[in-house]
Image: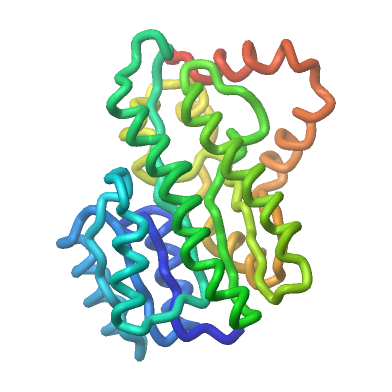
Length: 262
């Protein structure tokens, strides 16, 4: 796979960090985007020491208005063209919608939906013009059903999946592909940040290693797959949703999201 430059959002940890390690082996330049400049500098040193690659650090909070365009304009001014875009940045929150914090949810929508969409929009045109490019949008198995106690997060991931599938269809024959990566519970800092570490979902399920999820998504991207669901159980759950009574699904998901006392 020919890759001069890859850009990864949410690259400071978890799936994004694992994607960075994989792409460092195939690309000449990596652009790492996240809020933590210090952490990005650590990763830059690690990757440049291990591989003959140039790493560009962009410390940017993607929940801020115009954040995606700031990233794009900086690279444009330096004549850096992105061949692979990994839209990995995202986060969740736990609790009944009537009681949760709108400020956090507003930022969630900004990162999970708005920034992802704008990043895709900004970098896609150049890819189509060059007739070559790969985009991975990190969605979730949450995209396949409504999620009580995580309503905004689930809805945001449903958007990512629907958006990715639609644009992937538009891109047929252009040389550019979009892959929606839909992992289940994964061993990252997500559960703690979303206040979910005591829920049944994370206490009873065994989260997948972030490295395995990134590897699966990377291989799916190279094959040009539109939807990539790592893990047999996750595939079964995602596809069984389509035949399950719609009214029953929210109750099942709510039970998984409730705190376990055992």
